[in-house]
Length: 344
Image (cartoon, rainbow, N blue to C red):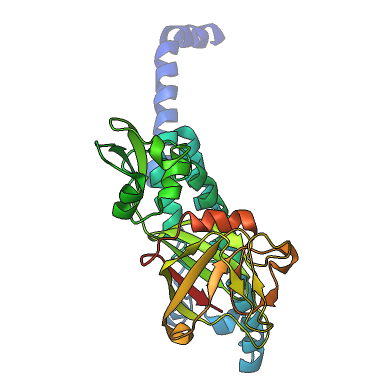
């Protein structure tokens, strides 16, 4: 019996294995596809809850409003700080502009006139005293090259080259250019007017020069037309004899070298050879044409025998200069053309 059963198993075992596999596969399919699985439900947000979810947090929910007085107290220092920052920014921007201009000149010296005009334009803007001194110092440095030196730079409307013609005289050339011939002699290293020769090229300057005197700073600024050149320290009128404000013009025939002078207070007459001669190296007579200057007589720009008076109120109203500076200004101001403005 047992043998008969084992023989049947041996004959049909492949079929039995196949049947078992079919039953197992059917079971798996039934579990996967026929048995229902729970579906997770999406949470439902109530309408009221949805309206309570803001896109931005309201101010009331974050920081409570401060009283108006407190807000004003905080805003005051903030505005002051902003003003200080703006001033500092302006100062740094001016210094940066000056540095940039000078750097461009260092890279290309032929751009001197462009740099000069750029810096000169800055003087028309709002500047602090320190910024103004910085710009003027750079312009004065440049003037030693484009004006007082022998070189002529491209596109310069103020200084040009001139071919001397037969019969030309330095005095006449200076009159045409509205500058003293002494300046042309100095720039071109001409020892005396008679040394000018036809056929030579000389540097000419297109004037006139003007001056601006500051009574509070005790300075005189020199301009060629509207371009700043340099500054000299001055002495001015003492109390009761204050240098009159207003506009003056260099008096025709008023430029003299050590003229004889009579002191109106003492009646004493000084001559150039006197050891205590008070007028120094030069005299530039002035004629008032505007403001307090109108109708005033006897005023001038001149040198001094007392350098300690420069930067002080010690004259009878005249504008005093160191003797070397008086010569330099004398060589720039043109009678009937150059104007001198005196301000506070």
